[in-house]
Image (cartoon, rainbow, N blue to C red; front, side, top):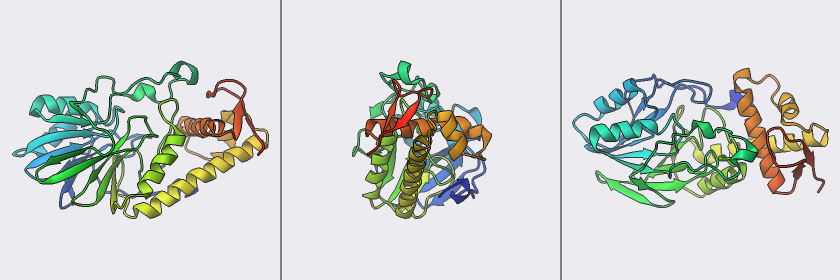
Length: 304
């Protein structure tokens, strides 16, 4: 996994279409394609009769109507939210108003204390109106329609990120934590590369057989893919250390060298990713900044 061609970019989920993707799971893709959302946000309907929706998605009227039509005649018990970026959570409160379903999932977004120092990252993307009825912590479970969902805390992409495990199918709904089509954007201050590494290792200790990400298609060999993701991130870390050793002291200079030929629309994401790696390297004592770690700081390698 050294470039985007190594990812799973074949996906047959047309926006607005209801697809049964497993005996217990249906999927509808929201019409919000983009550089960070791929073909759109995947909302998953779990169960029969009594159901839950994972990541209801953006406040798009057509998507909300598609979800309501797909669950007509059923009881929508839970609206499960992996994290509070606006392509994931806003539809939850609209669906709650229309159905009486319970919003359960991640904690509301809390601005990091160092926001004024590091800059906003992707913090402006959070849905600040999100208000869950139930805030789930790691290991908390919900039961509905004879099924069990378990919350798995996976901070990294955001501080409040959760995945949801469906025990009856040994599947994991991974939100933006693990996706097949691209690496996850980690953007300080809310995003943390150090926490992301820990969360990836946490999933390596689980026995989930299949991942359903919030963007793109399934990850069918989770353990193999996790190893590849970790290797890819460590390679990126090594490349950043090499550029520091060579005298590239700014994030702009590092991005220009290690992301040469990268899609220009994703240059900001690349810069935020390098920033996240540098913040982690500074915390681990492998690099230093000429002041607070920020996008504009100058960075230097610390010899071991």
